[in-house]
Image 1 (cartoon, rainbow, N blue to C red):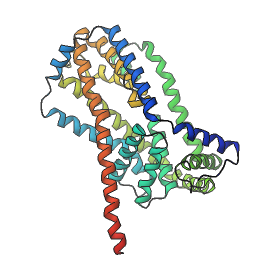
Image 2: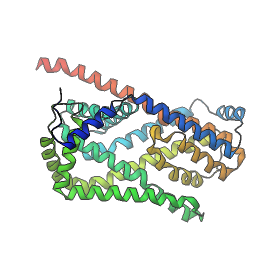
Image 3: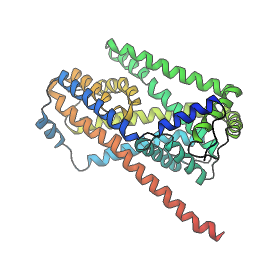
Image 4: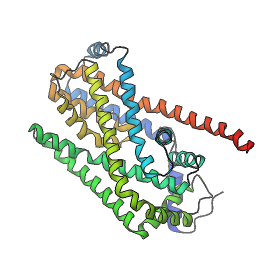
Length: 356
């Protein structure tokens, strides 16, 4: 049983914890309904979809193409998890991927901080302290958000290369500003012991909702120590993590391009540069639940049809359907496998511990 709130800050966190215990599926169902409405409205604005043509486009798929898509998806997930290895000593690429997939699965089907609880449980089972593991996970998340909101920079570069006008895409400058703000915040925390202590305390207050034994004072001290340790790793680790996550974005883009090509959208219809521009400016909207399903899809369909004409709309819808199966359904399946593997490893370690 948790201790009663002793100050307004703890009371506020406890109130947030009660709110987070509301059924997660309710919020997700609401979001899916909103996303469906947005998609339908966009399709109506772009044009009427020829659904028989969508099915004909899907018939272009052959047996070996899903294998290629799966290989790209695995590369994407490994690149997405690589910053955990970079930021947390003792975490291998394999363990980082298992941890990342498991946390992603929990975040989809259970309210926060369930993903944090699973991450810390995995770290503890591997002999990594909770504070160190969580601090590395936080750095991983912050780096990911810098990349997520910063990728429109690459989009603007491609617009300059192709000579296309930016138009409403200038609004993406706000996204880039968010990325810069997050980066500046990271640097300030790395350089300031007081800020590091505050982050450690508030992180502990959140985690204490699932682990009552957590002591904010201990976490604050651990975060300060970790700040000192991270200062050296940050100089090399942050750029490497950024490169890894940019690689993840490129893998995701490659997956989208392959889906489009596999269902019959040729380079003559929509070039690689046009697909990349559409994707890079749509990517910040993956911040919404389920990777922005509905919103991102609507933006991509509008951009692709704007580039390739009404004739590719059915094939574009088919391609995005395949892309979503792999980018959302694929990680869910991999997450189930990852958690099962980790739980099996715990059972395998028990007899060894008894023997010792």
